Image 1 (tube, rainbow, N blue to C red):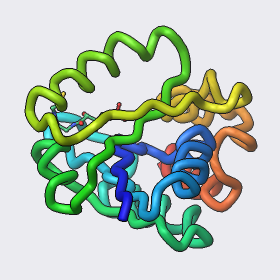
Image 2: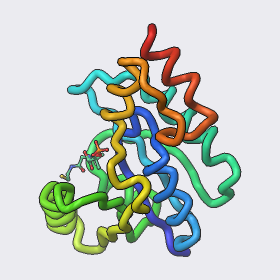
Image 3: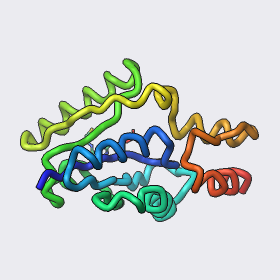
Length: 159
Ligand code: PNS
C-alpha cells in the first residue's frame, strides 16, 4: 500500500492545502495529513481545532486521515509505514526552504522520499498567514479557504 504524509501547520487549512490533499489522495492509496504541534508558536486555532477543520473539509475523501504529531516528521512517516512526504510547491520562493527540509529528512531517513506537487495556478498566492491577515482587516476570504470553514475563521479572528 502506498502511503504518503502531507505535513504542515494548517492554521487554518486553505484551498491551496485542500487542492494538494485532493490531488494527493488520487495518487496514493492513503494520505495522512499531519498537523504539527509546535510548542514554540501560538497559532490562531488550537491543534484540535485544526484537525477538526481539516477532517470536516476532507470528509468526502475516504483515503484521507488527519492526525496531529510532534517530534520528527520522519518518525511519523515510519510509524505509519509511509515512504513519501508530500509537499506543495507554490513558487520559487518556497523552493529553498523546502529543499533544505527535504535534504534534512532524507539525511534522517533515506527510505523516505519527499515528492513535490505544484499547486494549481489559482492557489499559487495563497497562504494561511495571508488568509488570516485578509480576514483580520475585513476582507473577503471566500475562495481562499473552503466554504465550510469561512465562518469559523471569521469568528475566531474577531474573538
Ligand atoms: O506548514 P509549515 O509550517 O510550513 O510546515 C512545516 C513542517 C510541519 C513541514 C515542518 O516544520 C516539519 O516537518 N516539522 C517537524 C520537525 C522535523 O521533522 N524537522 C526536521 C526536518 S527540517
